[in-house]
Image 1 (cartoon, helix red, strand yellow):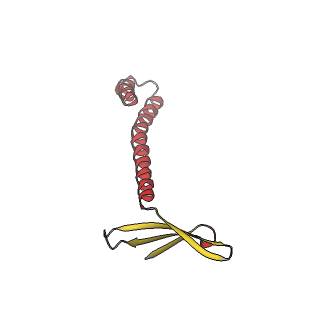
Image 2: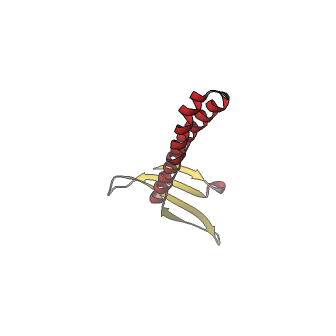
Image 3: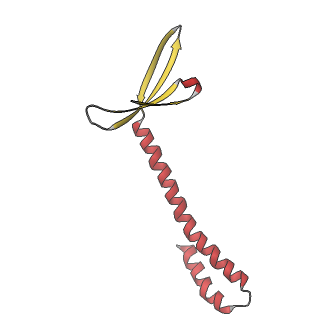
Length: 104
């Protein structure tokens, strides 16, 4: 079993283990406490929660990348048009592409 401590003074612990029945990694959130001089604790399966958090992080990263790519191309084309003030060829080449990329 692998332990990864987090929280205040090591009271909250994530423990990873491979289940005997289904042979897959599980993550337990273990909260230790002392009540009226007695020690106790509670464990909760956090495997699904951690999987959902991982999917959310991947989704946000993918959306961010998909938004950034066309914006970078639009910015580059607009900078080219702005640099070449009197170049009609640059405007006729890049401005329709900017319009097409900005509408989807």
